[in-house]
Length: 137
Image (tube, rainbow, N blue to C red; front, side):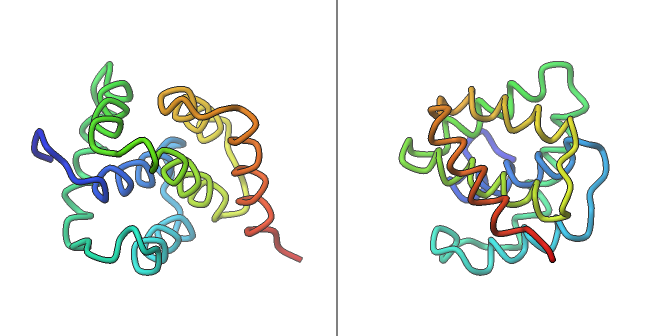
């Protein structure tokens, strides 16, 4: 990714990052990312072909010692404040997509919440919504 990324790229990066946080990208998570990009209004003008480049950048950043901090810096720089909760919400949806939250995913979400300065009460509501949307019988 270049030094300047779009807000949409930043949102995709967050989704990819939560998916790889546990070092196991599951099909359900990939499908959820695709569904989010294809259906949320925030991605209406997004070139989905950029997703591969964004994903590669996330993978590269995760190989670096301070890669997570760098990722969070890119995300904060690219997103307007009003989309911070959107970033957290879609990260929660991707994490919940496979029906199981792993410790690395939970830790990533916690660090994302802190990086984006999302109030704990708001985060709990977002998390509860994601959980409710992904329950199975």
